[in-house]
Image (cartoon, rainbow over all chains, first blue to last red; front, side, top):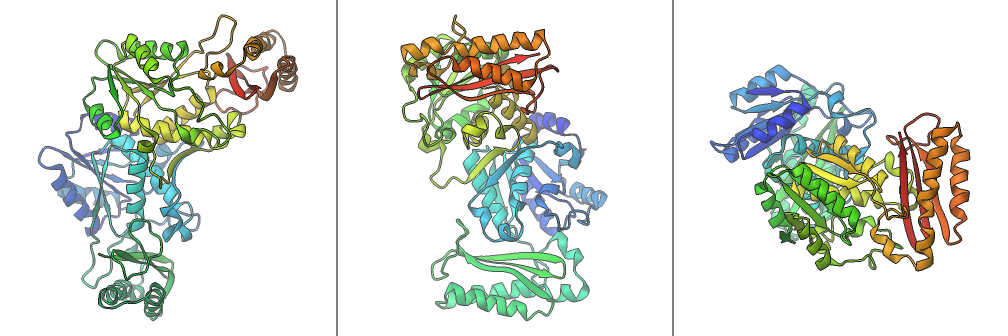
Length: 280
Length: 280
């Protein structure tokens, strides 16, 4: 497994990588969710193709009060895990190489990015779209895989690929969960024992909400309030948003017509967790 | 010479084009300036490579009161001219295929685009950056050639390639002029006989300004005013801007240190002409 840090070298190598090239962009601190993406990448690459993972904690997608500095960076362990998964190449650039001090060009999405996480994390999706554009240009993948936990990110990147005609196919991968239902996230390590105990409440609540969507006619407002009240029963939970939306437009949608996405973002102390269920 | 209108087909063909692929993006209404770019493209492509021209009057780079509708579209004649120049492929998509009604992703440059033409044409460079990104993804060129008449566009696209790590080399090409000095432009056909007679005043004035930059210490303010006053002697000329800037940052710069760019935008009736001289 090759580990590449130089941008110029990555771009040069990209031309010679056996195709299809399947990309798994990550911020490192890899968990089983990421490794499932790598498994899927290996499948899609087949015997002939290449699986490339990136490890880059992208400063531009963090807000000024967010956890950029303390975000976990267990680089050697990440590389060992990727090697075990027979990943072909890891691209791990330095932030100073990725962004010139006078960088002035960004990629922005203006519809899907205004909802959900876009409200509480202004600028986040500009950072995401811009860094993914850069990674696509540096690695030139045929396929790129993203987890469905970041459902909004996935929707925005699909839109970006469509609107900017990237020669890349975006593949979503189902959320990987702990046995108690908590969605895997690199940020779960921030949780105290007590927070960790309450955190599965998010998924449990969304799952029950899914049942009531399927079982009965319930209005969006009622459903959102019900989810909110139940999650707030966790004494340490502080809701950022709970929303029922159309999975394509991410606009609020009555749940009497499927598909709908049930999504929530919840703080436990300083840790912001997101989760969702697509009811289709 | 192949003429391609389908986006999907263009993207598919792109993979098989003999490299290097050299791109000349145009809005059609080709003049000798464009054809000089095609000559240069042929040189850079060499015997093995491919020259691709695009003909696309991009709606998103025109302001609401600008000339999108009346912009000349002599498509057959353009194709004949490109064929004569042994261009290998012409990509001429339809606007409705290029832009979804709910398109929401754009590429923006926020420093260089705030000066010069960016002031009088808000949104213009967002349109330019976005369409060039799309064309780059559809055609995947190794090199792209742009004329230096649109100096600001060239500077912004170089910045875009740098900041988004496009695997494309941008090549600028010197301005091609009429014998009387008027820079070739598809918009020159809009000029009345009298306007056409006065239009070379822009270049003549900039050339004299270049002489005084080289000859003597003259302040930016004095120089700009001198250029402005002289161009205003053309009874039909209405100045949009006259500016002396650093060719890298496009910020105002005293002309006692080279290089400087002398640039002007001037209306003759409803026709807006731009021109510049780089003093280095």
